[in-house]
Image 1: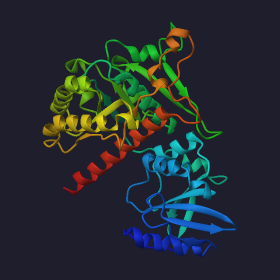
Image 2: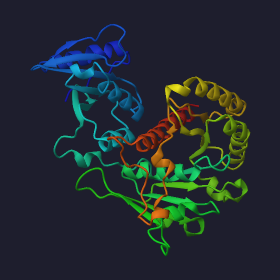
Image 3: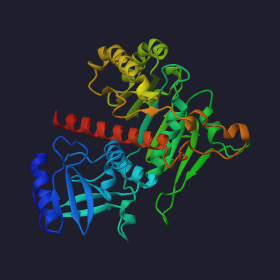
Image 4: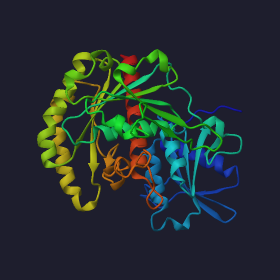
Length: 392
């Protein structure tokens, strides 16, 4: 297979792909001027397709795929039989998991491989095993989920971030550091269950699923769980009660907050104090503030924007002093309000088996998408920061 240089300029990349598609019998045209939904329109055998090109160094993420699928479902897109998304760098694991678990129709994902364009989704026969996640690193990755005040969803976020990684094929350990032990209760298979856990079936038929194992801190011994690459800690709200030796291991720390006037008034200073506390024990973790329970409706868009600006101002003084600290804007990653998350844990009341709040409503699961997008954002952001540290 001959190798070619992928242009960094989007226009030059569009010309390159246009030539490749034309060589396969497609008629290639450009969309109407000013169109931002897709890059090319192609036609062959009476079928018209919308094509979106991405030639970024980073892999395509959940948000980019979600935006393109929204376009394909929008009025006016019916003239296309399908949509193609072609990436010069491929697609992230959360992105592939999102598209496969969402069962999106009329969408194909393609990756540039030298001078060829190779289909990534739907996978061709015999290619399913190639999509199973490979170890991201030779060591375990640690996540700490902290609280700024009670009721912001710390335990829910810890559990469902674990669920997102499990959907991607990773076995996950959830460490319950909160004295209330709500995490253990929510994963117990019965009142006498001393080893809470959850099995997450594989998205690929014929492949084994993944496990989520809930442990107390005194049960955790890394050498005994070497196959577990992801360790997510539901931290104690009393910062000093979190074991210093464990906090030192954290690669990612997430502090959720609600986007309400009272929530910001109560939480903004506490988030900053939490960041400072973590940094006293850990100089390498990436720190993030995350919005939980977000209402994305147009009716509150102006209020949301003012609240976001207010919160960002409160956090900016610390963030400017810490290059590894970020306030995650909802456009990049956010946990939207949903009734499935609001009522997660109802199995404790009705006696059913524990499950994640990833069930579909009208063919979609906003919590599943949101947590896959969060995993994508965390991984992309910290990878960029690692490259910057290496360059320095």
